[in-house]
Image (cartoon, rainbow, N blue to C red; front, side):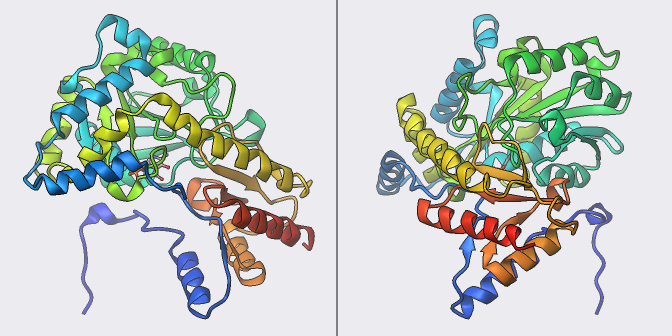
Length: 399
Ligand SMILES: Cc1ncc(COP(=O)(O)O)c(C=O)c1O
């Protein structure tokens, strides 16, 4: 019997990497060693403080429904953290608990925001390469993803001119993601200010919201460090949603704690959506997050140092494939590499052959908007990273 499902699912992709994952599982089941460079999550353990706080919460019978927008103490810590990263906002009208909603990972914060903001046909500007869920979430929320292609030559960063050309009367939301998954690009304060200037000068500025996905904020390898969008452009406070969470920098992807910080009215709208769908986030995970957010900044610096070293080490190996297209990442934990100088085949096909022939699993770039690129994660232990990258370089050099 054939079932039909809601029209809103038309054109929404499930996951382009499913077939690849199935192949990895098949090989592993046969006892074949596969080096896995697909991880979108830290290989490190969560902080001991997170684990202890969760155990403590269990022992204290913290088992009742949490408030829909999150435990007050956690929202306070999130507001404080965001104020620190956005000094211009802090000095004028600082964020408070009423601006924060704790969500099931950063993903649900982004989804809730889209559900609250988009009407049918509203356009969302997404700069490609992009995190693969943005366009699919836009479609689910009834909007239209407007993909703006940026390339390696422009440093995988959108230029003010490109932004100016893309804005029109239907533009409702602009998504920034720095540090970026998959490119590792980090926007500087000057670059954000130049983009902010374009937004400010647009005749449609009052209709436009900005979503700044800052989930990799603690993982930046440059001297200048991380810059929140609202640090550069605090004047956009009333139309910006800052998204962050515990997943990447606290190695807690499975605990599913994210959040957004946004004007009160939007936060309330997102709260209505969350209250009628998932309700509040697991209390144990929220208590664990409270313990992590109380840690000194130095705790995160240690994690960042590990990734900085791996990045340098990985770049040395990748430099041996001289025709590889690569912009050294400034943050997050991925190398996004272009292989078109070696051969022109879609990255899905390329990744399948790489897995079959060299037993190395990578993520194809096609669902991120770049079909001749693949994403190699350095969120893995040093020896697997070395083996995987050397194998990858060796494979390219046989082509
Ligand atoms: C750029 C970006 N935003 C959001 C998310 C979702 O994070 P979470 O696991 O907290 O939902 C990810 C996860 O891969 C990501 O890479």
